[in-house]
Length: 503
Image (tube, rainbow, N blue to C red; front, side, top):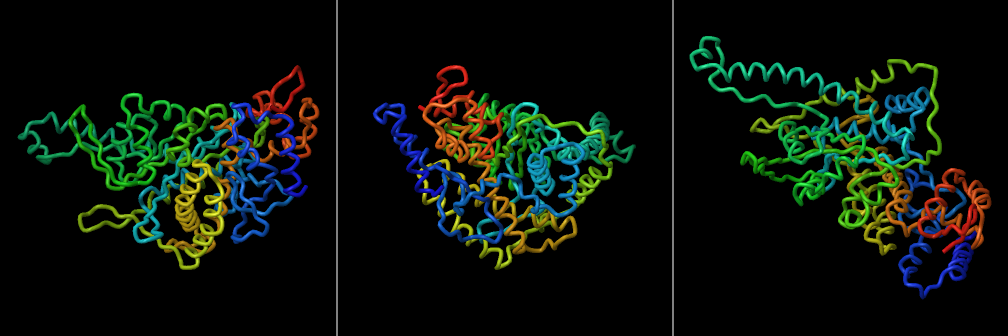
């Protein structure tokens, strides 16, 4: 169906079913609906920058209008073969969702890199691979297992560090109890610093604990929360600045922190902190809506929300031990990389530059895709997302280049053109994901699939009619029933059992 024809049909449905004078149906809501009409798109492809007959959706990149739906699948080609094989094995043997596994492995790899590598895009723009990631899905849909497998090597390393720390603390406490003469008799130094607890993963959600971990681990840390709400719900509980710290940490800019309890002042020159956790669709509005959508907090979090309609099945075939052993080997290789030091003996990151071709390709994407999306929307949330996607694109370039280098598929001296193409594809995946997330956060927005569904239904319809039409559009029966049960994002009202009408 041509775009203009579908626009007319939905506009007619709107006029027939809504009283525009009714205050609750604002012009803004109507505009959002029209902005979402019949947005059947394909995902942005690597190597593409120009699109014919392009039209920009509320959250989507500038893409051709055709009969293919938006591709919400994670672009596995960003991974080197060794990591891709691990993700595919987890799907084959453990029935793990590929999107959840891919997002988890990407974030954990970036956290293992920490401050060791950085990328310079412009003179004053140096990026480190900081990623805020949240896996979104209904209860028991399989979010947690792939996340646990991805982070397991870092947890194992932390266990090894902890054993060393305990021994060092035992030595320190014994030294502390000795007199000067006893220390001399045992050939112990006159001064001894208290050992620092080395770690990669932080689970304590308080800002004070995080700052202490960042001080003791200049390479950086990963906040790992199975339920991200346990982190977000603690914000501003004890003071009004917690959320501000995480807004700042995303950029990795230096900042100072004062502990009033012991009058301690901590300066972090290059703080590195990535975040990963899970949540449920019904919690998104509270966690990322309202003020957090406007102040850029929501757009800092990459969100993965695959369509899952049933619990994963169990497999009686055991996965070879070598699969996860390979993942641990890769992570240990990343962690073992040591950066150079400056004249004062402080570690400095290994800085990569973009090749000229890579830089021109990224500039082309910005001019022809991202700037176009920004210019053609009046939504502050969409514009905030455009800005953060540019930040993430450069970070993705760094992570992808180092992933392929660690796995022996490329060098690690500069960002190559192929890396830039893969980073663009990954960036557009997360833009498409945001188009699925937006309706969950803000009730007045529909994604392209349900917009087309409502446009094809009569003003009054039954559940069976909605299911029949949804299946033709590639929407599962359970998804459309849940959509109707939840009130259709404010666009549908239940008349009687199994009967609905548009409002």
